[in-house]
Amino acid sequence: MQDLAKKVNKIKEFLQKNQVILYLLIFFIVFYLILWLNSTPTFLDPDSFYHLKISKLIAQQGPVLDFPWLQFTVLKDYYIDHHFLYHVLGVPFIALFGDFIGYKVYTVFLATGFIMLAYLFFKKDKINYAEIFALILVFAPAFLFRLSLTKAIAFSLIILFLGIFCFFRQKYWLLIIISFLYVWSYGGFLLILVMTLFYILAESIYDTFINISLWQRIKKRFVKLKIKDYLLHFSKNFFSIEHFICFACSFLGVLAGLIINPYFPKNLKFYWQQIFEIGLINYRGLVNVGGEWYPYPFFDLLSNCGVTIIFVAVSMILFFVFIKKQKPQSIFFFLGTLFFFVLTLKSKRYVEYFVPFSVFFAAYSFTYSLAKINTAKALQKLKKENYFIGSFFQFLLIYVAFVFPFIMIKDAYLVRQQYKRGFSFDRYAGIANYLQINSQPGDIVMHTSWDDFPMLFYHNHYNYYIVGLDPTFMYNYAPDLYKLYADITMAKKSDNLYKEVKENFQARYFIVNDDRIQLANNLETAGNFSKVYQDNNGSIYKLK
Image (tube, rainbow, N blue to C red; front, side, top):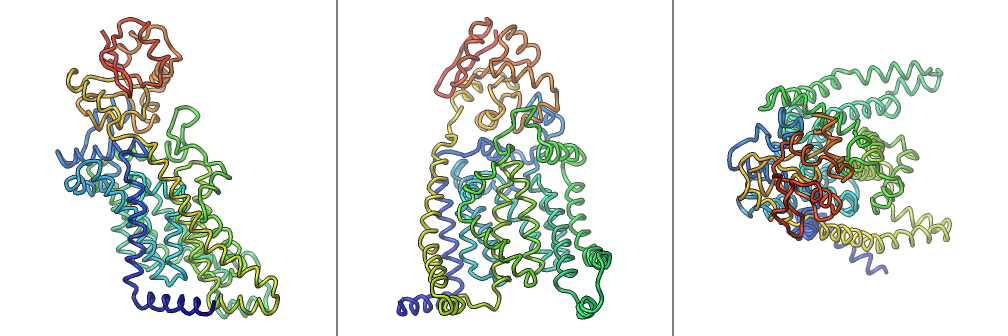
């Protein structure tokens, strides 16, 4: 046992002296894991087809400033590409590797880039066991699933955490640039302002209750401080000049990104709908929104976070037990973890923020709480004082070291199985090809569901469609029209179908998915709908 310990220590010393090897090791583990997950001819999310198409259009004709492809949504009048920089950076990958493989490779590099940024973050702040915490990030199934999507998730996380690094290091001028770029990159750019406020709050809590001055300590001992004394001290810290500069730089960057923008001023109306009506208010009771906007059941969230949730639970205990050892960074990530935990219970999609914030919280809490404590010596001392308890904790650590890797590998395998059941690259390719050959430019095509649009749009931007990206955009355009569309496509309405489709939607063709048997029957019995094409994905009916 002693020989094994000596060998482990020698390996540890070698790696500490050769940090480049550690960085390369983490990079290749993460890179090949994400690459393995993405090595299927499928996308996990239909929106991936939309992002790929926009990058292609940018490569062919420059920025997409108008969006006539969704005729019955508000996007027809005030579309903006709120992932503009993400789409632009995807262009070289398409040029080098082709459409689907190129965007898959792009996703792999972005996901790996975020994990490497997190690892660099940990190393810069001298976090204990930085390698373990970096790898925990990619072995939380819920987060791994979101991180591996061919969407701007990893891109957003990279920019957001660069912004966090800026106010950790008081690089406020750089924070202006990061905030500006965030507006051009992702619709959730307001998070940079929220995180800035959280950091100001964390620093104020730290200065008021933990890092109090010698005078405050003396006063606290001899004079009974009142609540108003703490509130006064807290308010002075919160509204300090430095904090004002920090928030002002973040706010100026966001404001500049909104105004110095090819989509200004129509982007303001778009962001109102995207951030508040879709992201926060959410019309899931009125429209059939995507699954990511529905609540995350509490116990499902715990099970889908894998080993991460165990580290978070332990770090919470350490955080409060060793509260006097905490620093603004751990307090900040504690606040962020609570914030995104609440949001995740409201909408599943916020798990992409909850997991990294909780892992960062665990990393900083562990490091600060156990500072100046030699874990090995502490266990030996505990074993001498109480053999049973000491042996139990020793066994527990060995168990964790051997069992956790198997759990993490199992979780990664389950995510891979989800990829296999994703949307194939050629989904609706035959239908789209038929329409492009046989229809006229700009003909409006009725389709079964709003989430069919990205795939149809990728394969054929020759025609126009009804609704896509989010049904809220159609609901806000015309609530009655959305209800009519939903009733027809869900086969709830079967009378006067030809007149309703022809007059209200001006459609020339109607695509029916292969699983909508009742809808197909309704069209065939309605008259004036003739089936002109059919394959494994569905059928096309032409309006006479």
